[in-house]
Length: 238
Image (cartoon, rainbow, N blue to C red; front, side):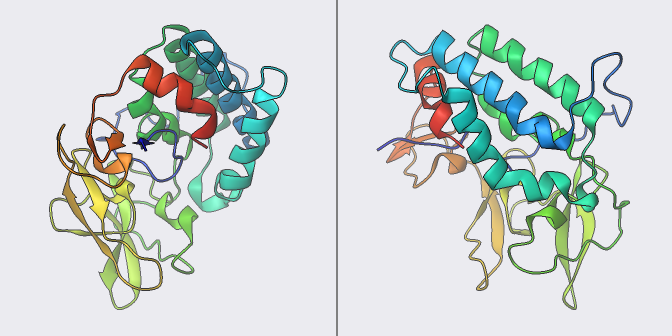
């Protein structure tokens, strides 16, 4: 069974910080946090029906279904004041996603999980070096509280966490976003142990999940990502 590491919001890979900060948006109408999943659903369903030769989603309910699952999964993080959700950045992000889907571009897979792609709607509120200690193992919002997108919230000893540069090979992590873009977080077990940043797997390497693969697709081994592979799976990726 093929497992894709795409559109798994808040559990993706990280890219180095974009110099653009809170100035994005221009004259585009801002997208409120409560409406963001609706924008995601438009991109997902348009791409699915445009780019998949055998779509499986119901065209009458696709957007509502995707928006509902998205809201259930990430609404608490979008609304948490620590993550600094930006309505103006969300407007730009929505247009970017629509452009990828219109072209059936497989770069959508990297963009959906990139800290400076779709996830940059979470601008963060904690300065570099500041404390971002989570309330518990499952406090996802804390992981997106750093306002430098080249940093992540990492354990600093003494039960405290701080905004520090993205982890290199062997550094501790709780999610892929804690590591540099060529790495993924391996071995994190909630309530049990931290993970470590490890190199992403190459084509042909054995894998358990697409998030381990540089290609984002796992079929017992890492395999290439194609247009059909990506866009046919979109509605079920949330």
